[in-house]
Image (cartoon, rainbow, N blue to C red; front, side, top):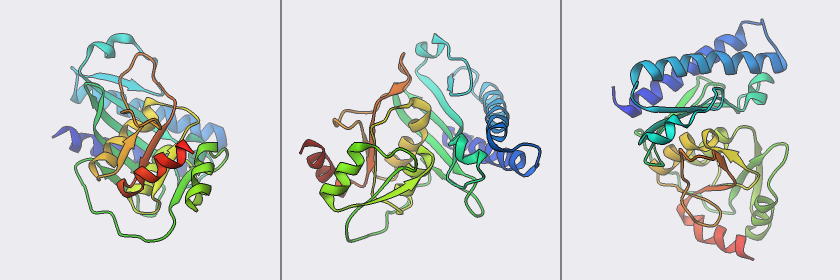
Length: 243
């Protein structure tokens, strides 16, 4: 099984486990979110330790160690990206499984199990982006949209599209439901590694807001900002950020 096949398989299975936890009726609200995080994390961690024992591992739901910094290959996972949305029974949450190689988001899969039928977008399953004319759509946080995103939308005559998890927002651009995902409120490596791997493979621009590359498996896992957008909007977004 290739790394990309493994990432997609694990994201798919974790998604099914999460739907089972949700549909059990045992938990609700915050308790449901915690149960989902724990269940998916245990599965993903054990599976990766078994399938790729020599690789490093970074998970939002596991204690971080510096051992991963000695590794060239490091799996970076978010068992439930959008725990709040998962706990509320919404569809805009995701499962992230990614492999960073020498700091680059190289392989990834993002599962969106809450969508009708569930889908998994992957770095080895590229497709063409649909053509679209008109003002851009920018996906933003449904609770605290970034000031920079609002400013860029105003300057470009764009439309704000509120959405839950980072993975759901990034995949909205991959799926042609939006053109720009601009975030400046800070995230962590597990929030964006898998989405960036998938988005890059689908021909999207991915970087920091200053244009510098997104780096992973760093000592400090905090990622201050990022931009994922169609390449035909890249220059206009950066120009709008400068104004």
